Structures are given as C-alpha cells and as structure tokens.
Amino acid sequence: MSDLSDLPDDPTELMMATFDHILERVSRKMAYSLDQSYIPVLLEFLRFQTMPEPIITMSSFLSRLKDGVPSETLMIFDQDQNQWSWWIEWLGNNPHVSPPAGFAGWKGQLYSLLDPGLGDFLYDSVKTDIRLEEIVWGGVQKDGIPDLIDPPVVSADQANYMLPGDRASGVSINGQHRAYPLRIMNLHEMANDVIAGVPFALAY
Picture 1 (spheres, rainbow, N blue to C red):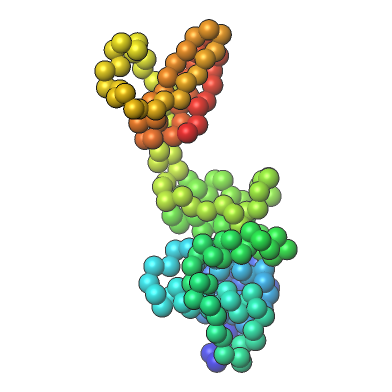
Picture 2 (picture 1 turned 60 degrees about the horizontal axis):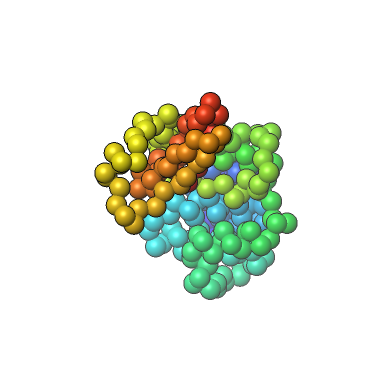
C-alpha cells in the first residue's frame, strides 16, 4: 500500500488537498479513513469521470466508505455502483451522511474551475434550504441560457409561425392576455415581462 502520510488527516484539510495533490492519492486516503463524510466529496469527482478505469477506481473508494471496508480487505462491489446516478440516489436516502466542514466553499472553488461565475453561488456560510450535496452542475455556464426580457409581442393573427399543434403558456393579468410559445421558451427557459403594468417571471 502506498504511503499517504504526507497528506493531512483533518477532513477539511484533506478535502482542500484535492486542489494541490494527485486526486487518486487524496481519494485513496479518504477511502481508507472510512470516514463517510468524504462520500459527498468523492461523488463530485465521480460526476466528471469519463474513462472506465477512473470511474471504477472512484466507485470502489465510495463503496469502501459506504460499507466500512478496511484498506487491507479486498473490495468487491455491485457494478450498479459505477453509476453517478446510483450514488446520488443513495446519498439522498442517507441524510445522516454529511460532508466535512467547509464543503460549500470547497465546492464553490471546484465549480469555479468549470466556470468562474459558478463560484459566486457556493461559499462557506451560504444559506440554503436544500442539501449542498444535491446541487450539481447542469452542463452550461452561468447565464449560458439567456432569458427573454420584455420580448416583442405580435397579435394572434400575425403569429403565422405558429402551427396548429404548438403548445404555449398563457398569462392573464387584469384582463390582458399573452401567450408564450413553448417552441420559443425551450431556448430561453424563462421570460421576464410586464402585462398591465405588472412585472412577472415565467419559468419553463
């Protein structure tokens, strides 16, 4: 077994070491500690693995933590546990598993590597009504899907781009009505508009 004594023992410091040391070594020390607080940390890295060998390695570390298998024991785990989605579901069903202190700030730094703007949302002492572990990157940069702001309006008889089977979201305020075609909303996911002097946001 490789010597991991140069890596910190403190959970928060070891979590932060993922930025400065070889990920496989840090992950191995986390797994051998049998401290389940590392499961949310390793799960973040499993999310971004694409090659079979790193996926299996990270999954084996996670399984070792989940089942409390010591380092000197051969690790055998179900192949379903190679799936990030399997672990997300498992974590959701095990609310007693919580990450080390400083996880929010660490996750903000990690996501800043994907997009500097994402780090603005996650920081230590951030207030949230959900578990920070449930926040995942959606695959686009911050503001990568532009919302509609005061979109142009045409009358119904001018909307010749609409097809008979097209669906739309309808909004009625103080006797004024407007339709937002889902074919257009698909590209924006949100419209910010004003009807009858009332500002509102339509999310789709």
